[in-house]
Image 1 (cartoon, rainbow, N blue to C red):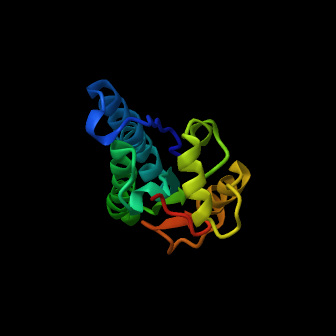
Image 2: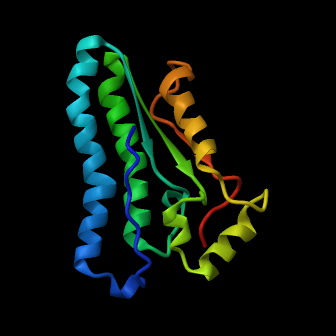
Length: 160
């Protein structure tokens, strides 16, 4: 499972180069490197499941430009690795959580949290255990024909 990400709340027109580079490295390059490292053993066993954690930020323009870009990249990375590894019996899928009660969510300005909550059908943020349940299903119990897909765990929320 790939579940590492960084987010800065920098204005789009003033993103420091070091923030952009860290986001690209942690959010996009590291997951691909981990899959590349795990793939040979999975290929030898002719089985394996990889789950990438993305975000609903992948589906729309996002106030944190590089965070959204890297999450969209994770979805393409998921499809690309699924295509490459599927013939070897390896499933590669992703989850795209909406607002989840984490330290990352807590760092958002209140105005952004308010915007997100107006879009959530249930009127509450997701609990980490709910995302974990989706990851567990993709990593263990989903049908073998579910490959290269993204499971939205977002309760209708999309960033504005």
